[in-house]
Image 1 (spheres, one colour):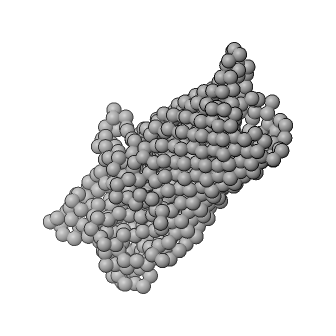
Image 2 (image 1 turned 60 degrees about the vertical axis):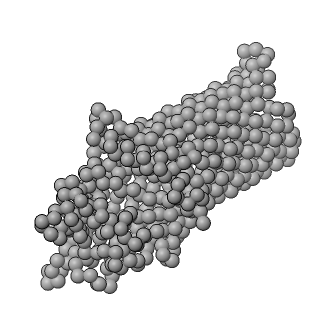
Image 3 (image 1 turned 30 degrees about the vertical axis):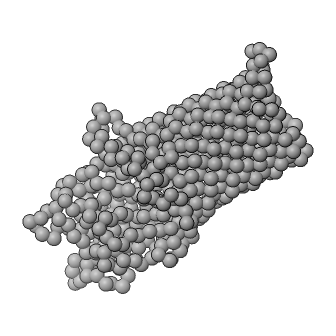
Length: 496
């Protein structure tokens, strides 16, 4: 079974008001697909050696030099996302559908400066490279409780040292407490590893990563194509989780139910550069090579809040009481540097028949790195070191492979594609964890001067979600998510 360990890491560094800068966020913000147009998606995104398509900017900007005519295109997309969550044998299906623009762009071809350099192409695109939309929920009765996590995280700290956004809120609403006044750094709760509670959670994330790219490509004797681009990725991400436990059978004296809500939003902009080239060995075969520099993001957590609600019965004669607490954070600004990427491509083109194409991409996700402006956030320096250490320990290099074929019949096109995005995990994590696979097919019609392409992409992946972490408890709450995302993409363009 393919599993992606997707753990919301909650680290207590006294009362630092940030949780959004985790190793999971670094991974999410650095796993890009690149393709945006229906034609490139129809062949699995394998366009590194082909060029002549506006999605080439995000894969191999050398392909910009292949354009013979100027063109403009627009690509809307409709996403149908489904998650089946299995929590100890109880399954829940959750759907989330949304319309987004996958991309828009234009390429402008001008004559070359000599007989050898036959044409120049300038291009501008705004393409979606990552979609963060996801929603799932689960429910079942199991042993153990999130109270164990609150107790473990708090133990060894005095009440004024607790993280205000996690175990501190549990303490303030009496979900955990000091059982002995003489030991203020010792904590207990009304539930423990033997407790059986009804657990449920709703997870929802929204947002996307769009890359604004400006590129230049040149054509040398229709044999060698070279190009480069500057990219300005715009990130917008928000996430909300609502976790609950309850005692529907009234087994426990004080505990009735509790709800812990966590919500945050992150925005940012980055900068990167891409260089690429395509060489035609002959009329049939061509190869491509591209290098993507790290993206240097400047990110801002515009919102972070947690809320704890605890329904407790102190006295049966007085009935239940609900203790509530909401904590919000100030705006936090920080930086993320993503890894280098290297893409090697090959294609075989048969005139009046079609083509076969392949890309292989190498990226080391362990090279992600957070940092802070220490003049402003000097007290976060130790936190960044901890998270960056987690990234190095947890993630490693991955190979992403994209394959595709296109059949041509007069003005009509039919396409098939497959993409395999390798696991970013290393070490003790299952070596097949985090694998993503895309199956795609597409159709197109290309009369003179205009074109219309349609693609359907089926994304398959597995992930293991753990709502909270404990070290000493024998109970681990694991939710197996089977994700099936369907995307319908339409690209319309005209040449001039």
